[in-house]
Length: 265
Ligand code: SF4
Image (tube, rainbow, N blue to C red; front, side, top):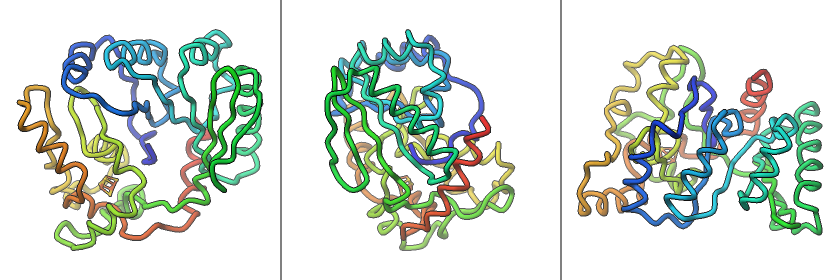
């Protein structure tokens, strides 16, 4: 959810993935389902994705968004999301005034769409707005954040060496570890790992630095029940791939860089 997946180009069409979604829905009963991106509201088939996933998994859907595109959503689209009880969560990743103005506009539009009644400050960094439905705003500029890479462009490299013993600490501090990612028909340890190969290619990274990570194999739909069970148990724990991420939460400046790039979308 929190990696810079904007580097991965193109939008997945849900009609191409119906059999894979159906297969996983017959095997898994996730407690919650979150649609991530990059930015999920950029996907032209976002409503079809929600319909398909809700129908197959029989769960309500959460959308994690940076909030920028909410004012640009057609009124009918937003209304449909609200009517379907899709839970929208705005992840605030910057204190840039231009960005904050966009977020305020989005909050105002959402409040009106849900016939806002009251709000509940869950913590210093999270507020839930209630009405006929609810949405939330999470301030990630004031939450610990484990960076998933070191550097940028062709200088990007893993946070730690593959054989470092820091992976347990990275995993301990990781905000994304509970989000198993279903991507292109397979299950991945986390959103970051799901799009790592595509992100690195887009960025122009030196792939030699990433070899062990690029050898990671996701869980595919031909897996038997025992294999699925043991994969799920391993997913909950720190694994060597977590050496990609830093052991300690990193400074807030990370957020500013990313949002400035997203704003140009
Ligand atoms: S590789 Fe591990 S530490 Fe890094 S984002 Fe994924 S689960 Fe978290």
